[in-house]
Image (cartoon, rainbow, N blue to C red):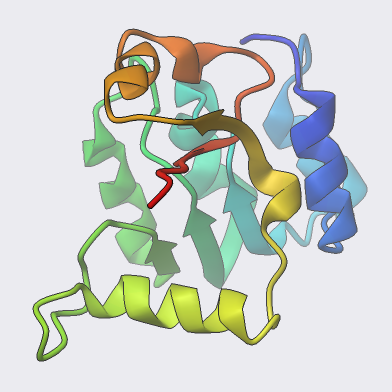
Amino acid sequence: MSEPNPIKQKLAVEFGAEVTDATGNDLVEIVQEKTKGQLIEYAIDACGAGTVMASLSRLIRKQATVLLYGYGHSGVDLSILNNLQFLEATLVCSTGASGGFDADLRPTTYRKALELIATKQIEVASWITHRYPSLESLSAVFSGEYRDHNYIKGILTLKN
């Protein structure tokens, strides 16, 4: 497991999360100790570590809510989520176009997200760590820049 990203940890804390660094330790033991055996009711997996995904069913309580932020769970077949079905967990997964399309054929999910940003119900500026001035410059992202330890989100900033 790679070293925790302090920028991402700070963002999580600002949203009220308790950040757990399991580097070099057993995450299940840490959670058992912190919760006095009660396990986790709400979990956000934003690390993309396969080891966390593999441990998820032993970290949450029955009927917990789990937000899976991203799908970069390297080295783990996502069929391990089958273990969660017996816990009746609610999984919230961000996926590009899920939720259908509006009349203008734009994904409903994007419209809702843009409304939240426009009405300042959520603040995303602190998440944007990389800006790209052209479509050509995006090749850096797909060539692996997204693996940069300080990369959270990148946006394309085309000028009219």
